[in-house]
Length: 345
Image (cartoon, rainbow, N blue to C red; front, top):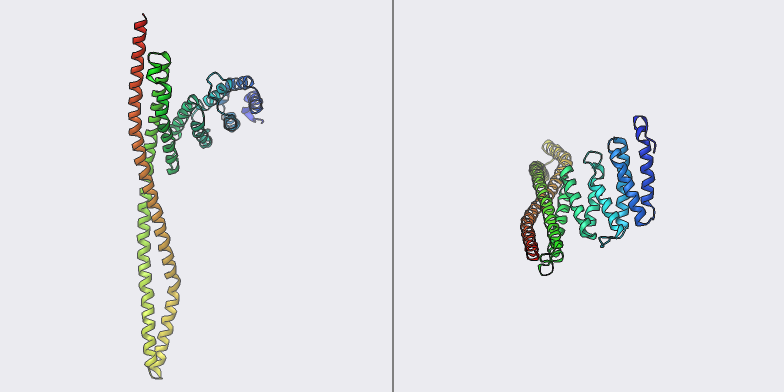
């Protein structure tokens, strides 16, 4: 890709980027992949300084990392070099500067982070949580669907948290051991990050409630106006029908002559009026049905938003308790380690 004009100054970096991304994309060993990622980190900061070059960098790196992280199987050995490569790719995504150039890619990165939270190891899951939190803080999507997705993410965190506590530090095994402090600190970090995410989700849920409440009120007002218009059209239609019935009865009993001719003319005019009102009457019926359907849908969205807000509040309270529990566990493990050190001395 040639960069015109003033951008030509970064053309060598663009060429290097294209060469490095080809190496990352290829089937290579863990050592080769780590070397290519290291070369990428060596040039990415320079590319941040140029808007055009940075956009090119994002268009190359984000799809590449997304495909690579999804196609590479997760690794659950801390010393495995492929795990180091996976973690480095996530770290690069986490350290992307927050600006408008990233906004078109936010959805892709969020989808990737949510996916890896379910499938990857604890270390990578934690950095995915950080990525999600930072993206939500910087770009603050407020749609109802995004709020629902955030709540699902937090609920996954809650589901894994008790298991993580048990697996990471069983006091009978880890009591006083330095690894217990690291594990307890990890659990606290996990709970803290999840709590921050829950606060963000609750704010967005509240915004969603306000938005859908306003929509429901507007739809209700429109439905009322449509109902009033239908009532007026119905009254006109019924009046025309009544006039036709009355004139028809009078015509049937009227003798021939001028009076009968006048009744026939009035009946013809009444039928013409009824025909003219038929289309507005049908349109008013359709408009009323449409407005009522829209009102029902808006009301349903409002109820869903309220449910999401209630769920977010419950999740936030649960995570606050989990955060306190994790802090207490960390304190207990630290004291056990201090006691063990004192006994050894």
